[in-house]
Amino acid sequence: MDYPTPVVSAEWLHNHLNDDHVRVFDCRFALMDPSLGIRQYQSGHIPGAMHLDLNHDLSSPVQPHGGRHPLPDIGMLAETL
Image 1: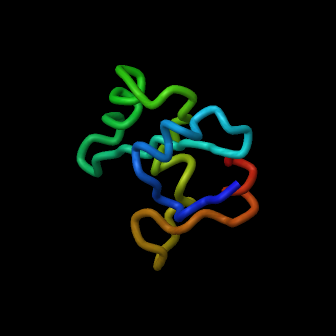
Image 2 (image 1 turned 120 degrees about the vertical axis):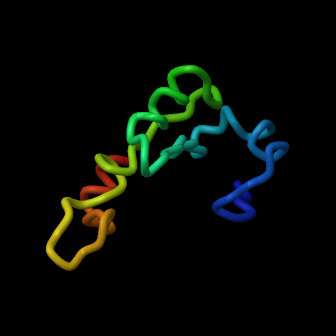
């Protein structure tokens, strides 16, 4: 299968949405409203998309010098995906 880039057009996604090797992740978030992303996902999303939460799925625990949303361990991220 030809994957043009990690970010694809709506037309490409529409044509490949049911392909076995295509995964869609809904990562909407708002820093000042941590539950906004899941609420928006629950009210509507691309068919088959999985919700990933910035605080729980896409970040490691905050460390003294790691910033607000440090990158997760690659093994943990792979397991999530």
